[in-house]
Structures are given as structure tokens and as C-alpha cells.
Image (cartoon, rainbow, N blue to C red; front, side, top):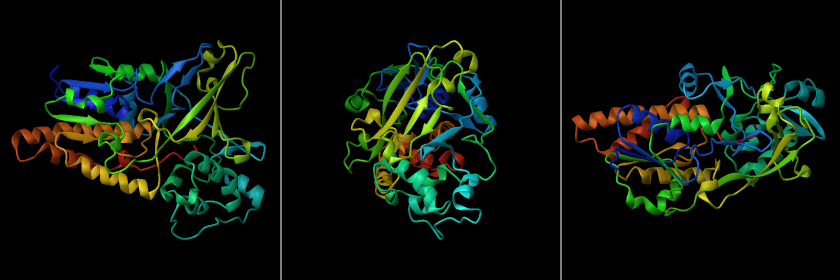
Length: 397
């Protein structure tokens, strides 16, 4: 087929851009290496009827009326406000950690253990809390998650948590929170409805077969696209073990229990999926399903989940980004394409900005032929700002 835009990857970034370009009247083709659409935004139903998020828990949240209106056109959401707990010294405690707990353990006059400008993740964490709290709640979790000493990680990683002083038990404070009523797989299929999608396609090995008229939008790993010519970027993922307990209603008080203690096993958290379902659905299901997640460093690009938050990989990613801008008719974007951790609402907002600018700059290019496709790609990445570009990575959550 003749296509105006080729989009590689059907996750949130690819799906939103595809939808926006399709609605603008352009011929779009989406390629997906997996056998299902949606990238990591996917779920499936266990034989018990319990819905499982295939690639880890996805708690949708946003405070933007615009983004909430956009995502809910593809499915309605039921309210789910995640409230996490973490196993510390054999007891469950609230996460994020509360100042009240610190006061009980250390005293009302406690102070953070680091002052000054943090140079790494550990120092940034200690700037919020005493070392004893860091050792109990954060250090082991981060060591498991990334497989390295937390002192080698970027200070910005600490932005994903806080010390709470207001008693708020919800993980997030966003105005809108929930899970799609018909599931994430249905949500992503609805988003791509009417758009040609080919699954099970390895674009990297077949790229010469596709010649879009205007632009290739690649949302996969940036180093893979360039055949690792500058070196390999590091990624982390999760290995998941599932256990169905037929005659047990619930085993945890909430849907997610973090496991920061190195002495309690290498899994980073335990998920009990039935907690994340509506009450009426819970009552119709026998048993419960638990999933333990074990962090790992995947060797296959299709298993990547988290960009690695250290300076070495950040610099390499920047080199790849600069390389991508030398290729005409190419836009590399998304979590793996830009090597940045976007939450779901950020990914959607970012993709909407990119789609809008693709359309605007294309119209400009029709009038001013001096604006090349390569320059358009540079502008798309360099001019975007705001919440869509917030750089955060997966820390305790």
C-alpha cells in the first residue's frame, strides 16, 4: 500500500500519533513486532477470570482534563486509586514513607542525612530522609531494580517518591485515576481502530520493504535502529512468576506490596490483581492470583521496559538522538526511542504534541521547500516542553 506515514510500534506513542495523523486524512501504516498491539500497555484474562496486566501494573492517572477526555473516548474507566504498602522488618508499612513513621522510629526532631546538592540517587534520597529510613525502604528496592549500587544512578530518579506529612495513603494525587473497564488490550485496539496494523513484523530486518511518502516514526529502541553502531544502551525489565490460589479470597491488603529487603528474596514486589478489579467482578471470582516480579536485564529488544538512569547511558542516548537527526524522513520518539521514562499520561501528551507539530511543520514545508524533513524532526524533538517531557524513571512506586 502507498502510505504517507509509517509508524513502527503500537504502544501509546505510536498509537496516538497514528490516530492523529489518520484523522487528519493521511494514509498511515503501523507495524508491531509482537503478536498484539499496545506495546507494554496490554492485559489478558487468567482462566479464573482475573485480569492481569501482562507487563506489570498500569495505574492510569492524570490531572489534565484534556488528556482524560482524550483517553476516555476509547473506553470508560472505573476508579482505582493505588495505595501501596512495603514490607519492612516483617511488617507492612505505607509507601511512600510517612513522616509519622519516621517520628516513631527516630524521633520528632529527625533530619535528612544529606545536605547540599545531590550528585547521585542515594544522596538525593538522603536529602529527604534519615539514612536508617533509606536503608529500610529505598536502598534494597533500587539495588534490585537496577542491579547496581544506587550511588551510580542519577539523582533525578528520586523524583518518583517523597516523604509524606499529610497522611495521604494514595500512591498518586492526580485528579483522575482509573483502569479501563474493558481492559488495556481493548483500549489500545480501540485507539487503533480503522488504522492498518501489521503485527509480528520485525521492522529492523525488513526496513527496506517500506518507503513512506513523508516520514518514518520509530518508537522502538534507538540503538537497535542504528544497529548499535555507537554501542548498546542498557535497559531493565521484569521476569514474572504467577501463582493462582484457588481457595483463597485475598492474601494481601492491597494490590501491590513492595519488597525492598534483600534478605526477603530477589523479587521486587508482589501483585494481587483481584484488588485492581471492581468489587462486583471480585465477588464473582474464586481464588486469587499473585505475581512476583524479578528485575532483569533483557537481551531481546522486545522485552525492554525501563531505560537505565545513569550518566553513561544518558550520554550515549544523546549521541544516538543527534545521529537520528542526520537521517532525513525519520522521527525517533517514545519511551525507548527517546530513552526516557514516560508515564502513560506523559506519553499521550507528548505524542499529541509531536503529532500536532508533524502536521504543522509539514504544512510549512509545503509552502517553504527549504524546510527539510530532517530539520522538521529536529524541531519536533527540540521545541517540545512542559509536562510531556518530564524526565522520570522507575523508582519505588
